[in-house]
Image (cartoon, rainbow, N blue to C red):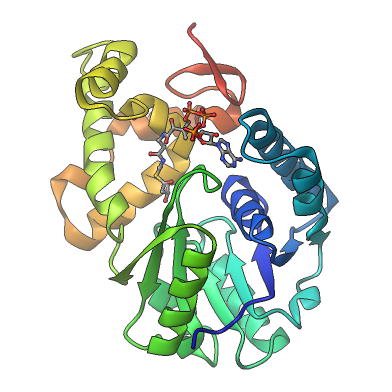
Length: 293
Ligand code: 3HC
């Protein structure tokens, strides 16, 4: 029998954390969402309101359902408020030092049976888990952006993750209406390992002025049926996040496909991070509407 989860902690309410909190609350789970300060909580609340507004506009949620969903998410700036939860999903920035600190703290705060999950896309779940006294209860739960819409969850098991823990989070993913896949702890897991060589190649083609950004994107949308072209998708993912994923995979495998295109680094240095900064390959007046400049 899979374990029943009733309350879940989510740490970090950026794009991914807010999306994960929304998915959990939509399924009737109580969520305690932790941010570093009140400004972070307000930003997270903004993400949640914007996304659930879209869900209502698209007929996926009614106004009462939206109010109930938002009511199930309680914000806090104190990790200590996670003492009683069954599961914690961490979605903070991709720094091993930061995650190690948070997991060590969670290990002290939560009960010994609480499962500690990371939404990391570029770090090793094994390396995160060893900062706790319960690496067998540490697992990766990798959601895809936008989390409320995309069905995949990669469940990452380390060599010491307990099989019951994997079974429990797979059952939870199914309850959330998602499609879980289980993989070992290898950089890029499955989807990013396959996706990012293609995205990187598109940046190189753009860098070499092989084609315009619009034509590169149109080719993959209209020729291959992808919902977004590669440069639009990089803007959605965030160029800094994409760089970290490529760089980690490159260092692990030395596969040239994953050596980050130099243009990516230059754009990041110039502050062009994609939708979240208002400009990446395209310029955005609002988070969802590209404006060509
Ligand atoms: N809750 C529930 N459903 C929602 C919703 C919400 N908050 N917001 C939108 N939806 C639904 C809509 O109702 C619609 O469903 P329908 O097709 O049944 O009507 C569907 O989601 C699409 O929504 P929209 O019509 O608003 O938007 P688009 O059709 O323009 O699609 C998109 C937008 C979902 C972003 C689509 O372009 C897409 O899938 N793009 C590819 C994204 C992708 O590849 N992401 C993966 C990135 S890699 C990653 O995340 C890994 C990480 O480690 C970096």
